[in-house]
Amino acid sequence: MGEKTDLQPELIECVPNFSEAREPRTIAAIAEAIASVPGTMLLGTDPGPGANRTVFTFAGEKEPVVTSAYRAIEKALELIDMTKHRGAHPRIGACDVCPFVPLEGSTMESCIQAARELAFRAGRNLALPVYLYGKAALHPTRVELADLRRGQYEGLKTRIEDDGFLPDFGPAAFNERAGATAIGAREVLVAYNVSLETTDLKIARKIASRIRESSAAAGLKRVKAIGWYMEEYGLCQVSTNILDYRITSLKSVFDTVKKESAERGVAVPGSEVVGLLPLAALEGESKSESESNSDLDNTIQYLGLNLHKPFRIRERVLEYRLADLNKDKS
Image (cartoon, rainbow, N blue to C red; front, top):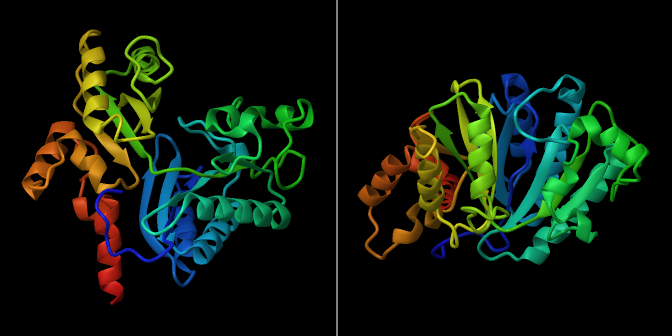
């Protein structure tokens, strides 16, 4: 997360992704469920109508954060019907994924414990099939989200009932309304999308296939990527997860996508970050002791982070958001 800050001891972050971004009342109800727990700080709510997916970010000590996550999932299962869900992002359920992330003063072991406690409660009390992934996975074949999402929600019934893809917690049966949930523990990642001035989905998918780590072409280390069309923007994007921004920076992803796009006669007008990101990720490879707000502003301008919506540093950088909320409480 960059330089050490005055964060609470054992502070962990939770970043659940829910399969709804077009119904404001549902988003508000989930946010209210999260914030209803004393000791939990709701840091951000980031809906994406095209993906039909909202990313919530909150933090606190383990017990209140697990409770907030449980209440959020419970509310989502009440309000979201997966039989009616359509969106660009791969998903398996109303709460598609719920990761716990260690911040300053906490450990990965605490996040693994949080993930397994939540998985047990949600599976037992909500009749929800739950799969553990990432550092919390119980099976080596379930570490990667892509393996859990194979076939997506639409293929889940066959996988569970015919192929023996049994959940780690909850009933071994398909929940038609809720789908399933992946709960896990991981390090900080940056969800970063680069926009292309084209509506040709084949181009976006081709570029994504070339820049992801598994590519033998221009593959970037610790980067996952897919191509999709964002209806609300009227263009395609290369959507990435940067799993380690210290190895591959936002600028490296942006420049590589820009190069691949130029070779196909397509311009890159800008990009966007989904959710919050650590300050060090925004500073990137040029970080120095003399880094100033003007340097950060130049980075934001270079990456075109204001293209689709305003990028406000105090709201989108994790350390600043935590500091501001703690200041408000005191």
